[in-house]
Each structure stands twice: as C-alpha cells, then as structure tokens.
Image 1 (cartoon, one colour):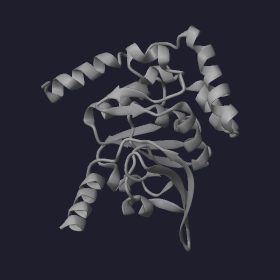
Image 2 (tube, one colour; image 1 turned 120 degrees about the vertical axis):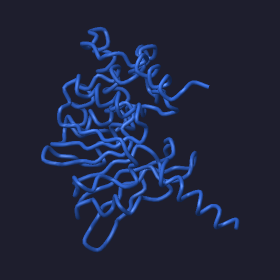
Image 3 (cartoon, helix red, strand yellow; image 1 turned 180 degrees about the horizontal axis):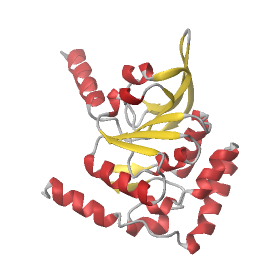
Image 4 (spheres, one colour; image 1 turned 90 degrees about the vertical axis):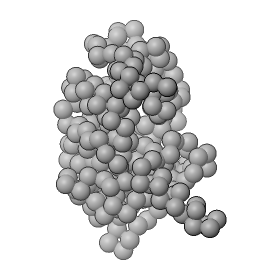
Length: 244
C-alpha cells in the first residue's frame, strides 16, 4: 500500500502546475455552457458567465483534460470527484449569490466549484477535510488568480466560525442531515444548498433560514460522495443505536 506522502505526491503530479488556457478548449467550454447548462434551464447570467470564464480543464487530472467539458463528473483522486458541470451551475444558481456575498463551501475538492462561486461572490471560504486536496486546490486557485478564495483544511461539519456569519453555504458532499453548526453560521435570509441522504438515495435541497425557522425545498435527485468526519461518525453511532 502506498504511504500517505507518496499518494499526495502522485496527486500533485496528476495536477501539474496550471498553464495558460488552451485555445482549442475554449470552444468546448462554450459548447458545454450552451448545451449542458443553459439548455437545461439555467438562466442566471452571472452563473453562465462564470461557467464560461472558469477553465474546468485546469481542475481535473492531466490525463482527463480531454474530457473536461463532457457531461459528467470526473475523478480527482482520493476517491473524490469534480461534479458534473450542470450540477455546479444549478447549485450556484440556487444559492442566489451576489457580488457582496460571503459564501462558505464545504468540500473543496479540486477547487472548481469554489472558483465558479468566486467569479460572483465577494469572498469564498472553502473547507476540505483531505489535506492533500486542500493543499493542491489552494495552490491551483492562487495560481489561476482566484485571490478571493480562502482554503482551510478541516472538518466541514464544524464550519468556519471565525469567519461567520455567511450569506450562503454550499455542501458538495452529502450528510444525512444538515450539521447544526452550519445552520448557526448562516445569516437570517441566507440559503444552504446541499445534497442530503445516504448514497445513492440523495436529494438536492435548498434550505432558507428565516426568523421563524428553516424552509426546506426539494430540487432533484443527485449522487454525491458522502460527508466524512464528524458527520460520518454520527451516522455510525445512530446506526449502532438503532440495531443495539
């Protein structure tokens, strides 16, 4: 079995230093936005513009770059994936971000969703539980000029209380239920966009925080990697209690 340090080194090789955008990938990116995103009902012009500007091929392993603008998720190492372009656009639109918003993302991955959010929001705070992914995403985002993205290695279940409250929170991994610390760190009037449920029976929800409580709206069935760390531990305890 490879050691953790060797695995991290291999991941770094797969994600070599970002290079200037390939001209031959500009047309596929435009086609991706038109055919996979706009044609499926995404109307927010800021979201469409962000999807056009962010070079998705910079956020996938080198050997997968020819597939960067195809209609589907792609592996990024550490048993994680970069989401399908339509899902990235949909979740961004549902979060209803504007130029003065401070947004928290749980699950940085390769940094693609954070980069799309950063094209619209004032500040993006993103947490990744896997140190190798957090380090490579932070480096990549900085080299690509996304200076308003702040990356933290840690358990997203706990959020980022030092920077709270947030105007919006997005989860790119699925818990069984929304962690209470995240609800506490959301402003009244803000939204959480998250997949909820056990794989493969997950649903994407928009949850709005009001003075009266939380309003939850079901959007579409989805498939995301499960949320790990404290969320996973709590699920295991709940399961043991049920069968105990």
